[in-house]
Length: 261
Image 1 (tube, rainbow, N blue to C red):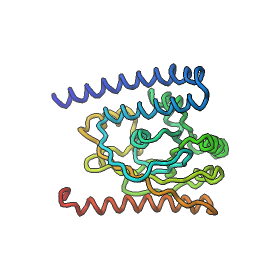
Image 2: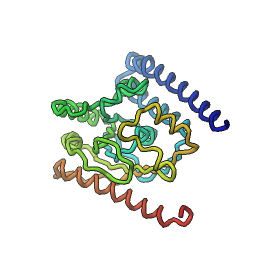
Image 3: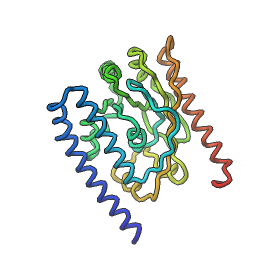
């Protein structure tokens, strides 16, 4: 009974948060651009996005261990991808444009909020769209916005890092922007419960996340890559390697931790 009451309480909070998000996205964002200069409107919108994601994080009771230096403005950040939760984890630290699959547009409420927040959507299997996506990322970077992408192109269970799509690195090379890898790892019970893979659907998975007492996760902002004179393929391979090495090192540490043994 206690667990059911806890879940109902969290679910009520989520409904209120989503309603709050709709008000921000549908009313506040447009008003900002009407009333403020472009740069000030973007800054206010970014602050609201981070604020909303932190509220989401608090409801889910995300216990985040963060390490490394946060990016300077105008950075392309690339991360391994395990769940939609990755967006909540990273997005509460830095304002950014996310690059995501267009499938998210069909998700209840989240699709609308993502679109209004400036998410750059990629249609699955549409190679003709690559140039347009690249132009959008270059524009965002040159406006001193951060862009967060998941170059694996899909989610995993977190125990491996798939090959990266090198095309996502090209805009940063053209814009001469910093490229910074991020490693995300869910810990303990969360490692088994949080992956959003295969045919998983958002609402059932959200309910599962709300039923957890705590979601433990580490997010490591790794050193910026030296990309000068390199092509997108070599940079993508290097980014994948440093993320994979970070995850492997953490798994080894946990396996020999006597408290967890």
